[in-house]
Length: 180
Length: 180
Image (cartoon, helix red, strand yellow):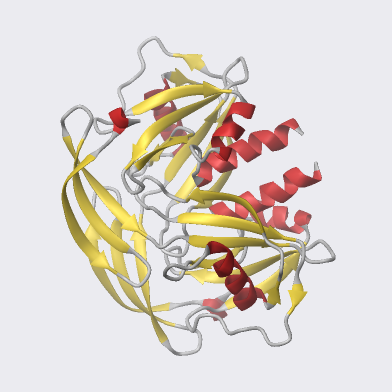
């Protein structure tokens, strides 16, 4: 797809954070014109659809500062530097839910906002959850509340807008499709 | 969910762009500790699942600078200031595909990356496409190629990673669930 390519003319680092970097590029378009591209770089993330032996979905509710509200989501977290996504998925599952597993299958992967960000989320599912005696502590600055809900209850949370994020809406639709 | 709330202590504007604003907040956590929050503000977006009379999905391929590659996506675009999402969906459908419609149903809405961004995407579907004689021009800096594919072809594009973004993976799964 060479004919679409946007050639970088200048690149300006705007911000280097702990989670994201922000960069402003000037690009040459296929028609020779120039345009500005606002770019957010993110290390990528993992998300897990954890299904309990009694067929409930383990969800976490947490405050999301960009929205100034809580969301109910599948467990997820960003990749550490050079971390294998599967390793990260086990780590986040353990830290956020107190369950572990020896069996995770990848469902899909997707960029969340390809227009301005390079964040890629790997989505896994597991039906083999093992309750941990001594689960590891999560990040110091994360406060989450765990919920175990049926698929119908999850659909109701979508209806009510308490579930309203890409990976979790995808997860609910994925489980819905499995039952049909 | 008062107990989860993160109270803003200080707020620092990092960047004001055409598409995103970036802000760095220091927050007070529920346990009294402080933490830093890197925040990306976005006006929100719309995406449309356009189904032709012969049951094909209209997709657009375009270069995504944050990824330095092209993606195949459902038509989408960001909201103009104070724009109604439904109006925006008709506008983006017309600009990107040359089709219009008088009938759009909302499928869902979701935040794409609630950990660091407030971007909310409204997803619509339409089975009533009308080919336009004189479609409006899109943004000057957008180069898209239109494709019309069957659901099986779309699933194949997901397999191959040419479709790999939240809204489009959701759309393919949505159409898959409808057929079951």
